[in-house]
Structures are given as C-alpha cells and as structure tokens.
Length: 162
Image: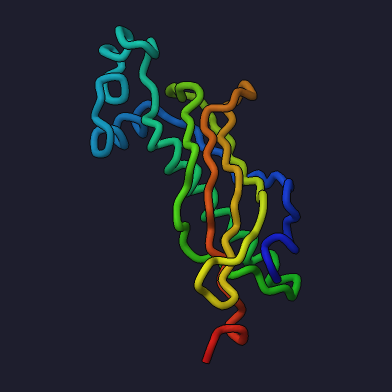
C-alpha cells in the first residue's frame, strides 16, 4: 500500500503531544543549544522571550519522537487489519522551517503531519518522495512550529530491481 492511498493529500494526521517541562528544556538545551533563555530560568526573564523556553531544535525533536511513535502504532494497527504499511525510509531533507512562537515550560505541543504530494524520486526505480506539511500547535491552539518535510517511500520488495 502506498502512503497517499492510505492518507490522501490534505489528510491532517495528529501524531501526538509533548509537554515541555522546565527540567527537560534545560537538559536538552544544556547539551544542544546552551543559550541563557534555554538553560537559566532567572536569566531568561531579561531576554526577548521573557521566560524559560524550549530550543526550537527541541520542538523539532518532539515532532520526530511523536512521528516515530505514530508510525510504529500505525504499522501495528495496519498489520492487525491484514494490511501492509507503506515502507518509509529516511528523509532527504526539509525546508521552510519556522519557529512561530516560543514554547515555554509547561506548554503542551500537539504535532501534525499533512501529506501534500508524492513524486517519483529521480534516478531510482519505484522510490517515491512524499512531501508533507509538519506542524506543532500549543495548548492555546497557536502554531509554534511549521516546516515542509520529504520522506522517502520505498518500493515493495517484489518491485525492487533484481
């Protein structure tokens, strides 16, 4: 089964949610984005965001964590129904990354993916590229993260060249 057969273009998939605790924000940022407004709640008050907020990369990692969990659950659900899930490979990249609003300690972000189109991957037999709009929305219904992603859809094993 192909991804767009399962989820037609424009189908908004809810992937899951993540609550950003202060300790998690500090732990992530201490290793990957050690700016004062991500690692020191007191110092963060004097920066443009006015308080401790998650690194944008942390919000992106939250999207990925939720996508992987969603896809694992979908693969299991489809198998139980006797349907083979589309075989997804790596992403060849993303574009138009936007961090639209700060994600503060205590915020919960719900993540979404909306398939847009599928196109044949140049120079391959049967490999497709799925383009999708990816989003994160906070508990107030405000968009905090948006980007376009590409995901490789692998051909069925019987369709691979010998």
